[in-house]
Length: 339
Ligand SMILES: [Fe+2]
Image 1: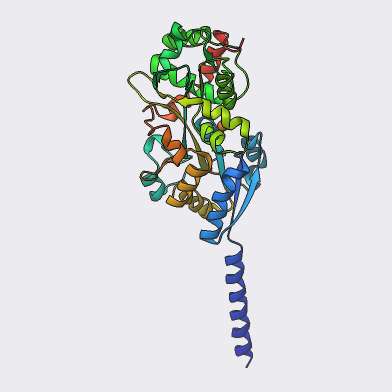
Image 2: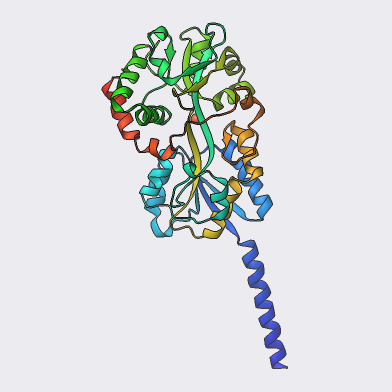
């Protein structure tokens, strides 16, 4: 009799633990990305996996926060924009290596850390916007931005913004430091105005006739053309995206990506979430929500993105570009780009 009760109790305890384990499956995501973009993707994951996703937005200093939290950090996955940040997070020792056959098979080698400490999830191309009315050509090289034919006709945001630091860093890798300096000084000499504002303002200024060409990320065209801001729609409609490449190379791209936090309390869940981010459903969502390019082969770009042509990324590995970011910042100062 006593035995029966004991085994009944044991069974009850066991069932309780199982139920507890099932409902406790969760993953903590730290991100600096905008809510409208990332939340639908994480909601899709929660629905597909049954895992509870706790989202923490950290606009500034995400990496420093994770480092400060140390061994007790609840962070499982960090979702970041810009390869330089992903590389820096790995260098700071706040990520951990992941050995996942699915991630290796899906994310091209140049778009992930060789030690699995970060993985790109989308590509973001930085291109030349041009006036539909005043610019005849449909293609350009980044090198041509320094051609005197564009004197007084170029708009761009600050050279110290990470997007431009990456582009200048890519030029350093491709052209070498001396030629990159001549190039950047040439672009500076062609500016229509002091660098200011953001990428969308480049389209605004082209529409207003302040400049004829400018540099901006492709996805802003999708956001302007399909957004709810009527003014921005007219900016987007006034410009076209030129097929922009380095001479003999391809289009400058940066990435957004994810890493498993060093002290992730839910490590297995963290890996599963990153695998989901490069899966078909999430890649389609990311392409459609923010007009970025999928890293997974065989996923179509968003319909608007497609209007700008297929992407042909420059073969320079993003991590090699990230390594020249400080040099790019110093070079921009040296040529007085923002003055
Ligand atoms: Fe952006």
